[in-house]
Image (cartoon, rainbow, N blue to C red; front, side, top):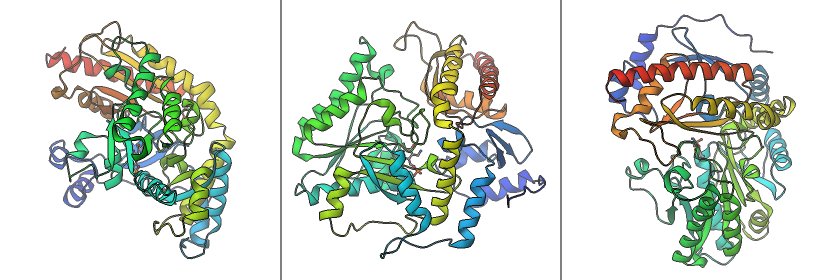
Length: 470
Ligand code: PMP
């Protein structure tokens, strides 16, 4: 390839941290805390499932960057595809009766990969922009349909749909709503399908039906003619890898059909193989009208997102909608689309989606089930290549008993710190520790990651004992 790697550079970590602290405002970061811990870790290189920091320390990236590096780091062929496109045509817009070759090819390829109701796609640069597009598009659809009063979108508490005004409003994160006057009008939230949180005294199957029923209750409360769409992640990611019971999504689909409500699947995390299907809705048994995607479409090598639009909606907008006054400079960016085409070629040629379904997903599931033998682990769940485990003070006989830690102790962050310092990246959501590894992770590498995790759980346990917390 054209990207022969340079010799490892020596970095002055402290100088970089000083500059970082002086000039760089990080996303979702308490900067006073960051300074107190001595500054940010500087990541300098990646290969496969591994990252290296500026001190040369290697770490297993259990989170695929931010749920996105599905094909792993260090893929020269993606860099080469981007380079070729950048030297041929780095940019042109798709606004004024123009298009570009990679965008056309990617749109056609996505139509081939997506569930059969999809033939059209709108491109954005991120998942947040994709969900902003969803919101404007469903409202525009109902306008064109002569039902402009259908303008409310139903979402769920503890959902994550992005960080723009609409994305953060669609999301159900209390901490985000508390800042900047959110949610914006026309968005309401129902309970999340968390069996651990809400399912006491029921079977999982019963709970799935009950949780979906909250949508019907909300539709009836608002008035059926008021609701434009329901949006949900097949598996909630940032909320803590919340895997709904198998009865949930089919029942959501039935309710949406019954009231003519559009169904939106936010596949920003679950798309492109994460759950062992090209799209998570296929595993969950849902038939959405819109799919938002980002992350895995390029494996994060360059920003790209979009919205797949089912023919039911697309044909209305095309035939009767006139101008849709919406778009981004970088909608259909040629370099990003070229990266996506090569990324999808890799996913296909290496059969990574099938591998997650048949081999590595089940292997990760068995490994996480084994972790429940650890004294700190109350419960563990996986779905494809996402997994979560709950740290508990004392184990119970089900997810509904046992003894939890006082949330103010931030035990999850203590555990995350031990992982981070000892070679594996896990994310903490409260006391839930989660992973979403690159889809290229082999069985041997899963073993290596689990061994690291177990070692760090032991360190965490000793640490908590020393603090008198267990
Ligand atoms: N939807 C979901 C389900 C996500 O997980 C994310 C990002 N974590 C987003 C939307 C927002 O994507 P972005 O950060 O690219 O705007």
